[in-house]
Amino acid sequence: MKKIIATLALATFAFTANATEVGQPAPQFTLPTLKTDSLIALKQFAGKVVYLDFWASWCAPCKTSFPLLNKLHAKLKEQGFEVVAVNLDENKLLGEKFLQEVPVDFTVLRDEKGEWADKYVVESMPTSFIIDKNGVVQKIHHGFASDDIKELEAKITELLAKK
Image 1 (spheres, helix red, strand yellow):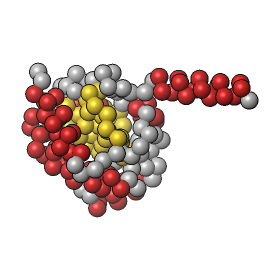
Image 2 (image 1 turned 180 degrees about the vertical axis):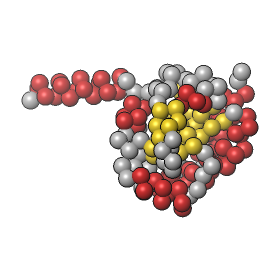
Image 3 (image 1 turned 30 degrees about the horizontal axis):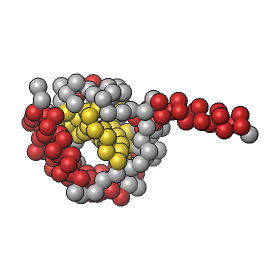
C-alpha cells in the first residue's frame, strides 16, 4: 500500500511540475479549427497578446464569457489582441451547436482528445491563459463570472501597452 501511495504521489508531483505557470513560455501547439478543420498554430499569433481559453459545450460560465470575450476582441483586435478558444468536447457537433447559440468572431479550435488541455493542466471550465507578445503566460484565470471581464481587460490592456 505504501508503495502505491508513493507512486501516486510521485506521479502527481511529476504532473504538476509540468503545469503551465505564470512566467513560463506557453506550450506551442497546432490544432484544427472547429468549423473547417484548417490547422492553426499558436505561434501564428506571435507578437500579439492572446487570451487562450479552454472550454466545452456543457460549460455554463462559457455561455457568459463568450459574448463578453467577443466584444473585447472586437474592441482590442486592432491593437494586437486575439482570443483563441480551444473546445474540448469529444464530439465536434456539440461545440458547433454551442457556437450556433453563442456565435463569435474569434478563432475557435478543437482538442477533442484533451492533449493540450492536459499539457496546460486545465482543471476547471473554463480555464484561460493570458499570453504576452513574447509568448509568456502572464495570467491564469479559472472559471468565469461577468464581472471578471473588467479585471481581464485591465491586464490585457496593460500587456498591449508594453513594447
